[in-house]
Amino acid sequence: MRSKLVLIAALMMMSAIAEAAPSKAAQEWRNGPEKWLMTSEDQKAWKGLASDAEAAAFIDLFWARRDPTPGTPRNEFHEEFLGRVKFADAKYTEKRRRGALTERGQVFIMLGPAIDAESNSMSTQATAGMSSASGRSGDRLTWRWPREKAVSFGMPKMEVAFTQQSGSDQYVRDVRFGQFVNAHPAILRSLIVSPDLTAVPTWAAQIASEALKVAATPRVAGKASGRIGRVLLLGDLGALDLDAAADPFTTLQPATQFAVDGDLAYLVEYCGSNGSLQVETKIRDLSAMSELSPAPIKAVAGCGAVPGMLSLSGLKPGSYDLEITTIEANGGRLETKSRFQIK
Image 1: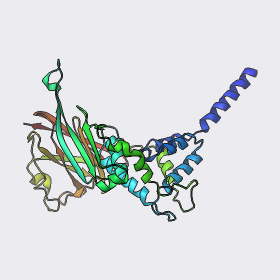
Image 2: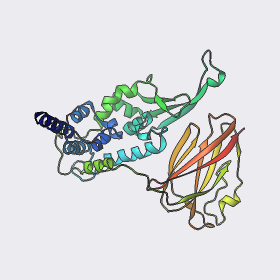
Image 3: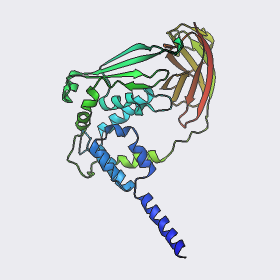
């Protein structure tokens, strides 16, 4: 009997310990893009939270301190943040890693769009004992912001460079450019409008309840309601007229061969709902994501055309598959594949 009571007591203690911490939903918020805005004080305070109620209060205060119009129900900074996250997710996704959590996503979310962006191709030479095919080509990106912005962070200039990892779509920030690291604390402090707030004010929007609800609800992909029809590969989209009465899939000249370092245009027929679609395209390690609404095809009722274009830069001559995945609003996925050649 005594051993049974000890076991029950131990289980009760373990249960109490498990409850004395924010839930998985709250931890997902902490590990999301919001982490890029957290100061060292924020991180320390988060570690001391013991429940979801405390996490909710932390989140509401977190955004209230950064609200550029305190005393009003609207938080423009939070709206701007969500817009940057959406842009980063669409532009900087790397394989299965969402764009807002990449190094490019971090810089974009913290500093906003650069006034000058430069992209240069670079090559890594094969090392001794490796074949010449082991040499890889990649991109080097350089972003720059106005001097007055750099000065506000105590820096003479603000320039961040990223290098593409060999053989992948991952970009890593070049640590030799130290402005971002050195200005990091100042950037975070500059975002806080009301540093003296220590409790959630009555005017603060209840962002936490929505944030935790979203984090707590896993996104389950539903069954696709539409279908992918024809796919057309094109040399360019210059001849495409989506307002024409004719069916573009029968009037445009398809292409199967493309030039090295050229562009590949495509047109996908989607038949289904009228809402916007997320479109993922992939050619081996090259991938991109966009959000588009199919343009109705007047000659084919219930179907629309989704156009797009990909750069073939970095691909050598040979045969490749263009993989296209459309993702509906409910998460339903439709996949198709088309083969082409680079000469």
